[in-house]
Length: 246
Image 1 (cartoon, rainbow, N blue to C red):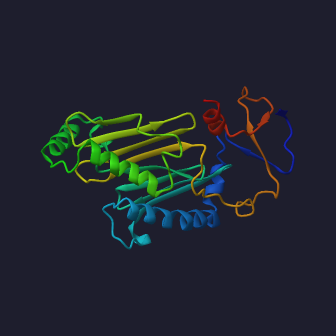
Image 2: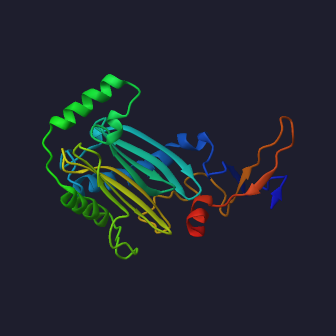
Image 3: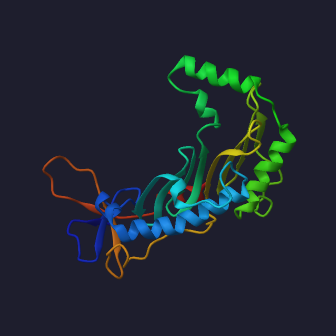
């Protein structure tokens, strides 16, 4: 459906559903997303036995960003300049331990990479493939991802990353994509990625909180030559449609 004139209840977003940057500075929205995301991150940190105090306070937060989109909120909360938790479209979807995920030694600086590699090779490996898999699967289960209920009897990928104490796991299905990296040095999950049509606990601010109309219609502006009149299309959740088509 092509739209040339916006009605009063139409809200223009990007093709992937992001609201303009001006919405991100809304303090009510920022407070809402932080107050929803903070307890979730502290609970996951406890469930995954991360190297953080049992009683986390907001003083441990070293970075916070939030931006609204049609399906929810995109959020990142970082603790101690190390542990980063992320939500995409309101869904908890990423986690990184910046000190121990494998990307730590995949920088543009060869000497830095070699230094990390050598340090990891000298470190004691607390795990093997079997125990690392147990940690990965238990971690998913603890946040509400039941692999067997989703049709997975075993990972589609389960391997040690070369000789370093690092393990890679993935579960790829028709409607689900999960990946978990486990460090043999820390004995914990150090990287997590999740995409699925099955929702966890979404973080989605109400329309009134963002100052939107009661029944908004979301549209996105189609690319057009410079100087041309704007043309819009109705917004569709393309990421979900792509998953459901697979």
